[in-house]
Image (cartoon, rainbow, N blue to C red):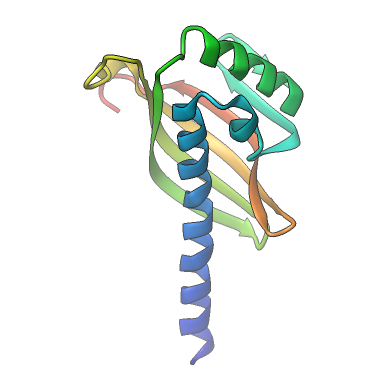
Length: 141
């Protein structure tokens, strides 16, 4: 196998591993499981949403546990990966279009979609969220 073919196959495998993180967090969200959800975040992770700044795994777990028990109960999270860029073997930046669909909704309204930037790190062979920042995508997307 040539080195270029090996590098391409390796890159595809890494991208699949990164994308699996979003599948895992979305499944934990749908289950309302704050512990499983935050298990894919680094200990010192940062989450920034409009009007919200969560500063570590414990803060994220607490906020998500309250949200899953309240306004996010029965909701699900959808992520569409726009780009995955590897900044090194253990660092990736991912941009997603993401949305929360609430219980009873067939489709979320167009104005609820967000664009998000994720900084991921690989530790112990596992990709983790180090930083997440989200903002409204706008109607034109």
